[in-house]
Amino acid sequence: MTQTSNTGPGRNSSTPPAQQLTSCGDVSCELLVDPIPRPTPDPIKITLKPKVPTVTFLDHNKPNSKLIMTYAQEILRERGVEVKDQILVKADASVRMPEAMLQSLSQEGGLVLCGISD
Amino acid sequence: MTTYATIEDIENCMENGWTDGLPVIPPYGSLVDEMLDAMGWQGQDIIGEIPSQNIVVRAEKAAATAVMAGCKLEYGRLLRAVTEGLLDPLLNISGAEVTTGGASILVIVSGPAVEELGFEHSTNALGANCRANATVGRFAQMMRYFCGRGGGVLESHGTIGHPGRISFCIAEHPETAWGPYHTQFGLPEDASAITLMSTEGPNSINNHYAETGALILDTIGDAMCHYGQTAWYYRSGGFVVVIPPDHMDLVSKEFSREQALDYIYKNARRQTDDLIAMGRIAKSPIEFAQVVPGEMRSPLKSPEQLTFIECGADGGRFSALIPRWAGSTHTVCKQIV
Picture 1 (cartoon, each protein chain N blue to C red):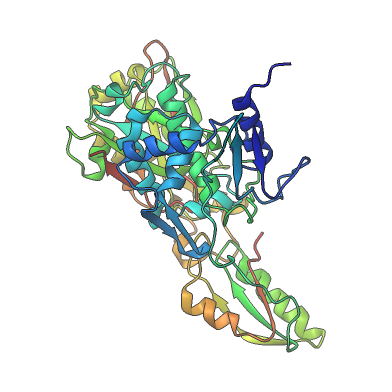
Picture 2: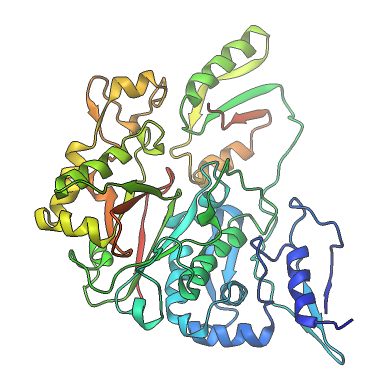
């Protein structure tokens, strides 16, 4: 019989997998081997509220991303929102952005708008 | 009522996210230790990293997954090669897991290992009811699922996915007309090998009445050129062509492998303007897409993006086409040692 450390009945797909399960027989228990590698530290940190009212654009290189970004730039400008002129471009939509770009964006005080495509 | 402890362990694994959706063999430590031995690793050996998710993968994770998928210990050396391939950064396992493209990891087994380990390479070759195919294919998908989601906290975004995301393993005939599959990646003919790539689901290709190999290749090329093929824009992945014996008999009489590649590359094309009109080319194409209005466009950027595998049963004039995921820019081919 198995016991779990952090979840109960009614688990849904958005609940992270248990980190530990134990199988207990009549006289002893055995830890099952967790098959899922865990990130160390947490995989990502997001600041939800920008410190400054500026929008930086990042085109992730999917179809029409740049077109949509440019359009968004125009609309935001018309509405009086400060937007940066340069639209940054990620080289490949399917892989992680370069570390230097990630570090640079993590220092942004404003909103970073990225990953738009049709 | 009798209590079946192992059944409860299976249920608990499934209730707590240690599953691909099907019942698993619970990863008891004793079973995982045996699998580690079979794979030639110590439990804490670091066997790969997924830097984008700050994940270090240790051998016990792969061994536990192999146990859960139902793999036999005798698959150990093959599973080690598969694991190393899955964690090769060029395969982009986390990208394949979370993409809207709903990709699976296709495992191709070729060489003497096919018969030594009991892989089905003939009847229902793409969906064999055979333990070796089913569990090795399942192992690869479980690794993708377990390792590609940031420890289970990231969501997959596959729009529709396909059944290969549960298991997708194809084995090649031991005897082939054009040489083993892995020779297309530079490995020696007598080697046993696994080849990994991320793919969409297979498209069936039927031609029962053609009397020449060229017509069979034309039929395959036509399947590559339907409007809905993902390949039209990026052309970054390519295709795997699966040829069973009846079609292969016709094709191999007229073509070598290289000639067949060249024939399809030259002839399977569609007018770029039609693709633009149909909405299959972005309005502002990126440079990588190499869009040239007015020209005939191949769904392949180069002939090397097309490979052939010989498998399947006699007695039906079917082939199959497996389109690769748009983000699948690399194939990983490893010798089993």
